[in-house]
Image (tube, rainbow, N blue to C red; front, side):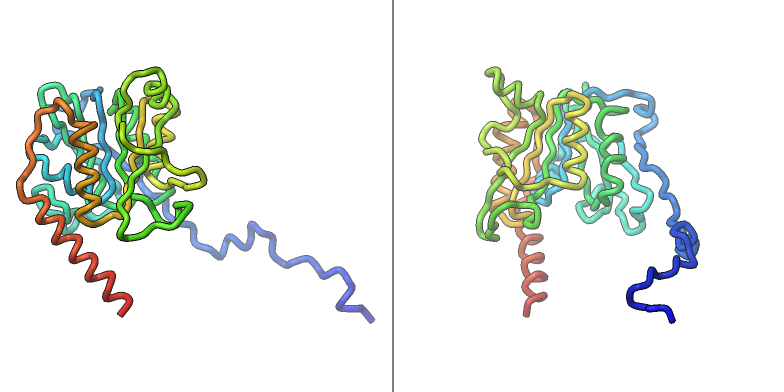
Length: 267
């Protein structure tokens, strides 16, 4: 009589590749693509600075710069366009591209107003940097994720750190001015992932001066003041631009509404 405890079990009736036959294959998503106005559809853009905003304070501040001109958009096919307004709005799920100076497109601004899945991050980054848009310098504005930060983060504490590509850091080490001057470097052991990481690594590979500015928390008047100060003092110095006067009040309402929703979750 066979010993069912010690005898070698019989081989499975299914091979691994056979088991996959019972799992429906996921449909391949269409590639993301850029759409520009007809007058600029064949143009290669070479801005002196490309600002890519993903954090709430940077999106809110840059959205209210009224002197920018909409020139294109990045379409991610899995993001539905239903419900978007005809005019650019912070409530839209969109990724619009603007020129701050329409004469020579010296500064371009990208407002990423939807979440990009990790597996799509590199495809989006390739479109924004190095193909149709070839910037001399890139600034990425994102928020710190508490799960990626080595240390404790208090919701009452407002902080920001930076990461730079080797070329950007070499510029500051040789005595030339870095893009963001007043921030400490992101603490060792902390992590950046998603689209921000894909953009910064893309800059590194293409030898573009790149800086990632990550701020905490994502909402609140103090972090808005911090991000605004960095942009006005370090980035937009010497640039002619105008800002809508009501952006601070609108951001305060957004922060209060978000705080109320979060507090309701724990009552």
